Picture 1: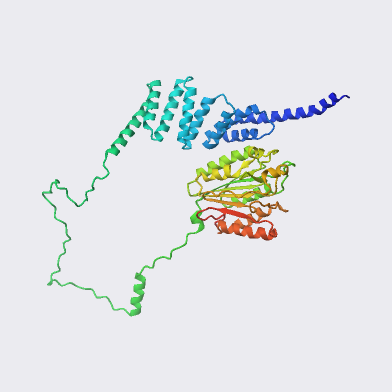
Picture 2: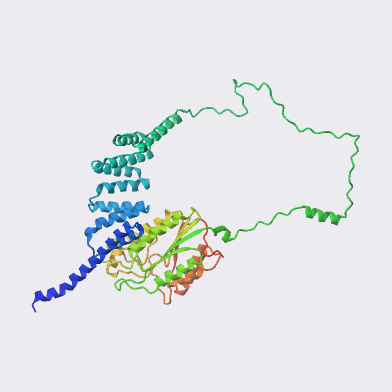
Length: 503
């Protein structure tokens, strides 16, 4: 058997394996399109994200995957994520540039980045005006609305009149012009009113004010005097002893009720509580299988449900699944009443820090090089904490039991000599808890649960304890049981109290 024959036999399985992998990834892309067409935008984001985080894939589909994922995010109102994906599709030379600039303009308008929105509308008009006059009129009308928000009335009116020239019978454009004209007139009138006009007191009469010819006399209560010759019969009360008088007086005096402290149930019983709980164990052998995170997440979720939390639990999650569920979680937090909503995010599994950011490691991550971390791992500060901070929740609790070891020893030097997670920036109304201090490694445990989550479930199940008291107890117990090797850490910027169990 010659060398060429041997080479062919060795290469054939590799080629078939590569082809099968590419086909599987293309299936993810197709599934994403199906989800989008079914209006399952969360599902579309999950599938497109899983496709884009596969190292082995047909990258010619990336441009469309970013485009459709961006539109899915737009439909869900996540305008920041939508803009990021749409810009990426432009960078990859998507051929639908006019509509992409249009969607970007809408994204920036919703994000109150009005100057950026004007720039994108201008580009969209330049590209699309020759294709469809109706589109051009709509673009001009939308850009006029942004100009009006910036106070640039003249540019807004110019756009509206240009749109009306294209569609002279469009009543909506006519109404917009009339409304803007009325607003402009009102502004002019307001400016013409002098600010130093003296105020006349209500009881001070003006010189030219006519006097009331028939002033009404002031009414007085007439008191009829008692005539001295009329005898008034007075009923004599029987004499009472001093003890009887004291009893009567005590009965007549109404004692004020003692003020009662409201219960925790009365104070926080109507609070909406939402939690997203993730546990990743089933990693590849190269990354390192973990025994307890799925158990930790499952048991922690059950404990939260008993404390009136609306809990979403996902285990052994891919990047796409984490991203889609995070968007659903954000929408739940926005559904609650402002200042009566609490959000809790819990993660157990592999985690790492890189370039001042902490990352969740999905079970499907394939990290070979340093820049793979940003592509295939999920950023906690950017995609979790920042998203929670922008919702209606009064308090955001982030618990990270994700410091077990370095899952990528091959690039250990690239990601830094320190192990575990790094300390994150403080966020508004956030309580961030780490299984161990920044730069240290936590124990995965020898029982069903990791040491940290085991003690956390015990401490938070005790009623009437503030969040600070719970985590102080956790820290004391973990340090004692680990012989001082594991030191849980918290970073708090919260205002107000929170109790896991109210009663």
